[in-house]
Image 1: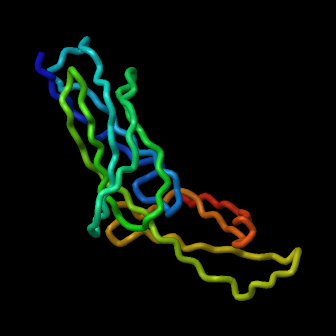
Image 2: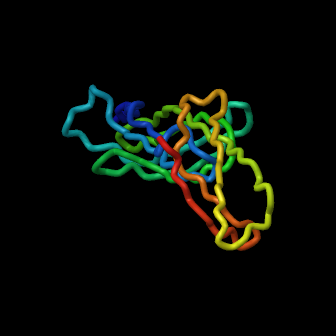
Length: 171
């Protein structure tokens, strides 16, 4: 038996919540694996694994973000990763293939935006005083999206990073 070819539906390769996120944000990368159009509708569904790797666009080594099994019912494989490095990344989803289908791959991208904010004018704040915290979130110049998603956590350093406020970014 010669394995049939598969196609990875590129429109179903997603980065959620968006392709531009703040550093430290959790991102779900998912891809749908489906047989080539020439395969009969009642044929066995693809199984196997998808490995997700990220390569910095500025150059550097690829990093394996994770590997996940293809869901037998939906054909979807996904990994949940927490972004750390700032910059733009090409992400490749590589399907391993199985006894019935050949391996294949597809690429997409996402950007981890830098976070810039001004330090407080004074580190001494009276209890009960009103304090305004602001953060300016700016995507990298080569970003495909101008709207970073996720949230900003304001913390008190040195106190096991106690979160003062967690503010979702406006969409």
